Amino acid sequence: MNQPGETTHFGFRDVALEEKQTLVNDVFHSVAQRYDLMNDLMSGGMHRLWKSAMINALNPPRDDSPFALLDVAGGTGDISFRAAKASGHGFHATVCDINSDMLEVGRQRAAQRHLDHQVDFVEGNAETLPFADRSYDAYTIAFGIRNVPRIDLALKEAYRVLRPGSRFLCLEFSHVDVPGLDKIYDLFSFNVIPQIGRVVTGDAESYQYLVESIRKFPKPNDFAEMIRAAGFARVSYQSLSGGIVALHSGWRL
Ligand code: SAM
Image 1 (cartoon, rainbow, N blue to C red):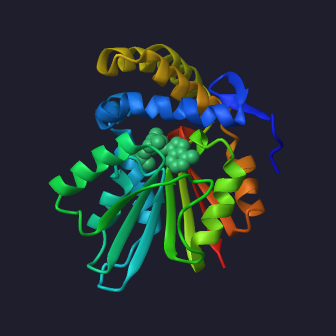
Image 2 (tube, protein in one colour):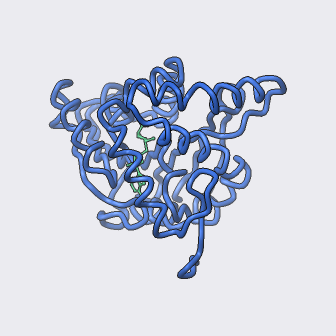
């Protein structure tokens, strides 16, 4: 349980737990309009492959059976749109995010894709989800959980809103485990990404935070332990692209 006055990381800085969310919100308000372009530029398009891996694992029904996905920290809707494309007519996604600017970009993208009847956007905090117990068939969170100040609370909330027999999936930057690649990755992350951020969004600092927050995120085995501690069973993870990203999975049984 977190105590008042407890600190956490905002990138490499120690900040009060309460302050972290405000700083994170500033980052995503600042980058919302250019967020999707930046994803392609920073990852060289690789985020598309990582997201496809998540959708393959999700494996939503292709027939008309009902399937309710909750996509937390869903931002501009990428995961939900991909899941909708891979699904039948019974699919419905709720994108929940704390940031109104990211959600607004998402709503516009849903309308452009004619997916607004299958994808809803709801403002909410991953730590206190505004949804009923046992109301979803799957929970996804992609590149979101490291931004949440109290990860343990977010995991407990994920467990609460899932129906028994349904799946938690988390895609997150992880820790490079290939010798040689780690050096190149560090050079690229700390030198190139903030500069791309400066040119494209006028905001190098936000991207400096994103790079630093990746380094502070728990190692995959430790994060798997946190998922177990929230009550999930059959917890596993898969490293992608030499450990740049990990896809974590757990089941509410
Ligand atoms: N999932 C999307 C994707 O993969 O493109 C967006 C990921 S973006 C890197 C991280 C998102 O986490 C932002 O939209 C941010 O507003 C959201 N976020 C940060 N803290 C949150 C919280 N406590 N609850 C819900 N969303 C949060």
